[in-house]
Length: 170
Image (cartoon, rainbow, N blue to C red):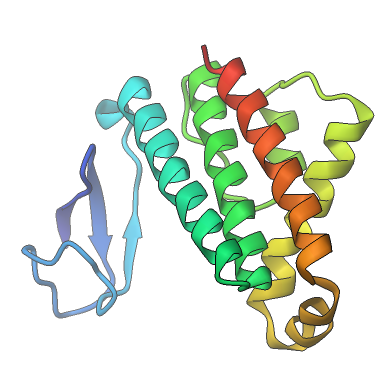
């Protein structure tokens, strides 16, 4: 069965893999769907805007979490902030959908961003925040490592990288 899934900026043709489908449902948590991204619905400007706005929201959440001393989650959301900006940059530079990955270094390199050694190292480290807060077996050791001092250092680095990527988008 072919239907259309509407996001705020795009209409994606989808194939429904579940028997029950509610076309009014914006959040398809209850349905197993495969989204097929169509070239016809691709609008690079809207997609860049979507990724940047989403990243900005995550950035604000990161700051609030940091103030609340939720350091592991601060760094996890910091990772999302950078990931979404890198996806915006990919779309901006390649005029195509970004790769389905959380690996920041891979995203940056596939976007042809010019990275020095320090940026590569930072992106590789920030990528680990995605894994370390997501999976229970890593959470406990990461929680001990992600104290206030460690988190402040990496929040500052995330802010610098965020500003740098936004500058590249101009």
